[in-house]
Length: 453
Image 1 (tube, rainbow, N blue to C red):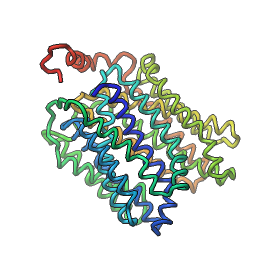
Image 2 (cartoon, rainbow, N blue to C red):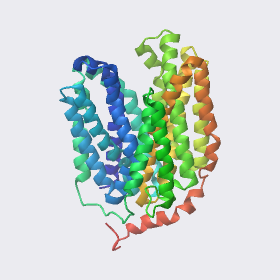
Image 3 (cartoon, rainbow, N blue to C red):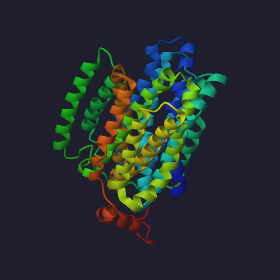
Image 4 (cartoon, rainbow, N blue to C red):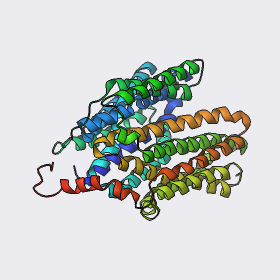
């Protein structure tokens, strides 16, 4: 599969997942009325999917490393589309929840592969631009998703929301299957015990944060015990789920930490600011959505600029400055009431987050060897799943202290991540560390090379 088709498939997969989350949120009230479901049941249409994805992302990335990123992408896309179509025909809320679990399994296969395919297709020094295109597309999907979902749910009913992605999933899934089968390099075993322990660590943690209640403390306890057992197992395992070259690399850990922090700060800020706009300023939902348009615009616009910033400044300065810009945006919003200050605050949030997404993801994916690209992609996706859950949970807990205080806390959280960027590579430092990998990529395309696929 050529690079252009690989990029198109990666973008399509990322956009499909992003649209699924945003359009479902808008369609949930219509779904609830149509299926006579309770609020708790409707919440589980999102929670069930989130729990499965959070628990399986890293293991799914490992499957891609072992059996081929393109195969996992195709399987994920086709399964995701089939599950979406089945949900559109579901006769009751129980079927919807069960099929969302199935959709979560295929979503977990799909997401790491969208990054793993790019790492396999592009030389390390040319990864930034495809990652920027992917990030811009995600921003566009997040911006248009509520509008598309609202229109479909209003005019055609909630079932049409799930049919939206069926044809694209079928088309790109089949496209990824076509052509010559990819050469899959030899990789270590799958480490099934490690995968199980990681799933038991992450799924209860996400559930405790996303749906707090009487089971929160037991869920956190299970997560903590499983997490300790997972760390002990990985240290002793001959073939660990997380290769030491990935999770043990300082820049990768720092980039993942920054992604968790900035996504928590962004989504926590957006949760709080929704109440500020609608209850504090008396705006209706449409007016409040219009005020936040600069966020989507700047996220889409900033991502393509990031490759040039990475070449000029390196990942350390680019990520650190962008994280500070995001923190400044939250600080502006904590005092903003007029249209212009609100626009400036949202624009800073979008510019900072779009740049950090590209720069930090570039570090995570580029630092990994091509044989561990799926695990790296799974870790990146896990960070971007956990961060928003943490942010919304924290925002809910902070609302009693007042929205302005909550916004300042999230600005401080983003600012606290700025020093972490010092661990990231500076300008020119990645070339030496990755020279062997780059030379390997060059060698694979030499005519007559017996290793050439």
